[in-house]
Image 1: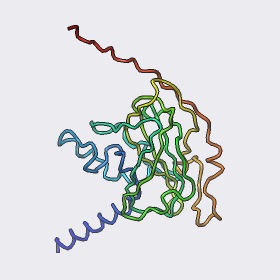
Image 2: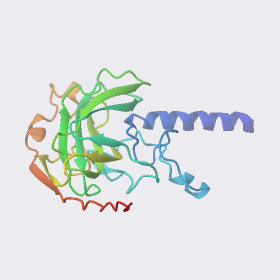
Image 3: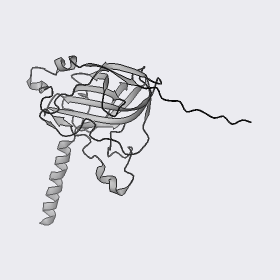
Image 4: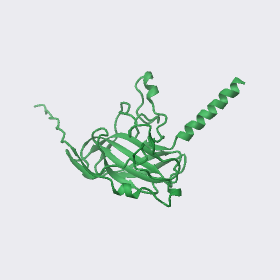
Length: 237
């Protein structure tokens, strides 16, 4: 009898995990992701810090469950380096695509204090991503992106289902100009807590997908200081 109860509880728990899972970055690695190819905890005591809900939304229209990046840092490891102007073949871990939605990709050079959007895909982003797949999405780093440690952020407002905001943050290095600025618009954080812009379920709203909110995003310029070049000492022969 106890065995049957335990099995039932395990099944319910598994269903709950599936119900909570939706979409996240797979590459580049999101912070504290459970994927084997991503940075891992350095000690046994840190395994409880692994984010097994990495695919879950960071909030809904009336509740913020996590900060935009969920975690303040990744586990120690090597950040992938992307060149300015490079098109990165990002990979998304897809559980449910919610009939697509609107995606934004943004960069931050100050650990998430300020962001600038570098790419958009409105209305049907990820609509063709099969459930249970690893889906490739090309993302282009701006040609004038400054050199430095950065966060690449993916945001998604789904078309169908609960009114949610999904977000993945990956720690990366951008190799571009030594110092400079990057201009664009600040990202829209819709369906992210009470008072945030509300985007209704598209299927029941006559096709409304939040265009007025995306059009109203504020212009922003972020400036990255030039890095001091290390002096190379050449031995005398």
